[in-house]
Structures are given as structure tokens and as C-alpha cells.
Amino acid sequence: MADYALRALRPSLPGVRNARYLHRMDIQSRNNQSWASTVHAPEGRAAILQFSQWMARKRVLAGLTRRLLVGQRADVRSMIEQSLHTHGVPASVADATIGWLSRPRVIVGLARRRALAGADAVQVLIAPVLEKALPPVAAVAAPSANPAPPAPSLNTSKFRVDTCEHLLLPGVPADYLDTPVWHPEFAALLAEPSVMLQLRRDRIPLPTTYAREGYCGDRHLEYWLYGLDDMRKLVAATGLDRLESPRILDFGGASARVIRHFVGWKPGADLYLSDLNPQHILLARRMFDGAVTAFRNSGPPHLPFADDFLDCVVAFDVFSSIDADDTAWLLELRRVVKPGGCLWITIHDQATWDILPRTMLAHLLSDYPEFAQYYAANPQLTGRLVYTFSDATYNNCQVFHGSDYIDRFWAPLFTSCTTVPLAHDYMSALILRV
Image (cartoon, rainbow, N blue to C red; front, side, top):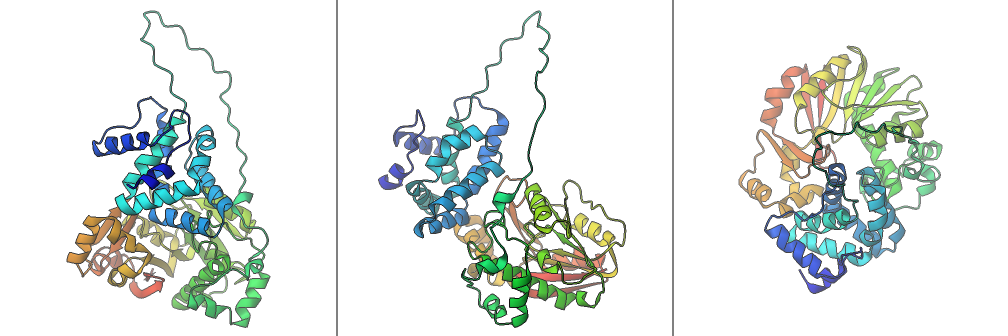
């Protein structure tokens, strides 16, 4: 790596004073040695590893760099702080390292290193810096022949205030009419008087860029239009508008990008949102104040509904991230949907595969040589392809489904299976009728 980049990445923590530390880490990573010489709490190290994997993502570094270029240094620091908190990095570590992590020279240097040497090379720089700030675990003494009884715990209680105000943008969606809209299809929606009227009537706050996992960056109006566009497409394709009081579940609904547009659409609509991330559940409860019932689903495939309860299940960009239990989840979703109802799920299929180099997934071809080699040798997508890029609990993989896999394992579970190519950006949609 260039000397400039090494100087830019020099940490300012006590005991880490010069670039020789970074050279030493490079040598350790090449020799596959551990960078930690001090014993630290395993939960702290696990949180640091997950944060380092997030920070090393190409899209994350690119987004941080773009914000620096337009002078949004405060937003950069805020995004990194929120990620440290979300990944469970100890507060003492976050406080000690946030100054270094949010330095423009550091971010630019990390982005260069990511481009030159890949994600692992970035992780091996970030993780040791954070681990330096971890308090060491006390040494374990040799067992005594007459051990003393353990002292009673004086304080085993915990206290937490559930709040998400910092994850919401101030005001209402119409306040962001001056933010850019890049996608021509979304820009065309604004020309419709009914859309402008709907926008001005919408009093539900928008989540911050961080809370919505980077969707649309700082283009807040485009984020709102993106959800409306998807809502319209699925209603037109599934016939939901013919139902008087539909019951709809946004499965894996995240920051409620789509389900928010069903609020007020039908006076008697019964709306639900589920997600793995508890932060999204807290956010939905704050945003909708009871108009949408939000709950966390985790563990084995199970939903808290009776049989034949829902009219439609919507799952945007969910089955493209389910590494295992995809069929089990489809069976559970089928159980809770009424006969005649349907599932609308988006997937990476052959249509995605054909245009992959022109999508947001193009980095898979540049960052992972084995993936690029497989892609070049297999123009026809067959079976099920899973590429895992992180050890995180969820959102850790990209899954591609060939038509043969769908026809063999998914379609027989339903009365009909219809594909809508590229219905959701570069993803196709399946309409599975119960």
C-alpha cells in the first residue's frame, strides 16, 4: 500500500503511534496470525468483528467517501457512531475510536485499501485498533484447594430506554421535495397530481439513511417514491385492490418502505410488519402508532397467526438473503395465507443473472474472483447459488435461484407460480397463489 495511505490510516490511540504498527498488522495477516496479544471479552471481540465487516463493505466506504466529498462530515460521524452502537461495540471502545474512524484521511485510506486488497485487508486494520481500546479480562487464578464461596452479586439489574427518535428525519415527507430524485421512473410519479396529493397528506416521518440501511442515500423523496412504486406494482399484479379490507404482512419489512403506503389506502386494511432486526420493530411502532402491528420474527420458521389468516404476504429482498430454511418459510407463509390469497416475493433469478454486471451486485464480480469465475463459466443460472460474505446473524449472503430450482421445490407448494421479470429494480417477483 502507498505510504500516503499508511499515514492516513495511522491510529491515534495510546500505544499505537506510527505506521510500523500497520506494517506489522500486514505481516500478521499474511501469516494468518492473531493480531490480539491481550485477552479480551469474547462478546466485545465478536461485536468488533461484525462492525469491521460492516465498515469494510465497498458500498459503506463508497457512501462515506461521497458524504465527505460534499462536506457532510457530521453525517459520516453519526453513521459510524450508530453502527458501532448497533453492532454492540462497547461504549468505551466507541468513544475511544470514533475520532479516528471518522477522519477523512482514514476513510479515504480505507477505501483505497479496499480497492487494492479487498475487504479482509480493511478488516485487519480496523479490528486491532478497536481491540486496543477493549478493557482486558482479568487473569484467571489457579484453583484453590479451599475455594471461598462466591460473593453475592450486588447489582444484577439492567435498564434500557427504548427510543428511536434519532433514527427519524425531522418533519414529514413533503418537507423533502427539494431532495434529488435520480430514477426516471420515480421522477415520473411526481408528475401525477394524485401522487403529489398523497405526499402532502402523508404525516408519517421518514427514517434516516442509516435506519433504512442506506436505501437511496440522502435522496429522501426518492426513498418515499421507491416504496410507492413497489406498492403500486404489487397491487396491480396481485389484485389486492379488489379486496374490501385486506390483511397484509410485510415479511422482512425493515424500515417499512412499502407498508407505509398501505396506511390509509383501504380504511379497513389490517396491516402487519415483521423483521429480524429489533431496531426496525421499534421504528415501525414509533412511526405508525398502532396503524401497523410490528413484531420480530426469529428462530425456526413460525409466525403468530392462525391458519388462513392473511390475504397477502409481501417479501421484498428477503428470500435473496435466506441461506437456509427457504422452503420451510414458504410452507409457514402458505399456512397463514387464505385460499385464494397470494405471496409476492422478490428474488435474484435468471433475469438478474443476465444483467448482473450492471446492477448493485456487480461488486461480487470484482471483489470475489471465485464468484466471477463461476459467473463467466455459467451464463445459465441453475439450481440455487449462495454467496456468503459475512459472519453476521442476518443479511450476510446473496442467494440466486434458477428456474429449475423454483419449478422443483417452490412451485409445487402452491396452486400457481407466476414470474414478473425485474419487477423490483434488478430483482424479479414471484406471485405464489395459495
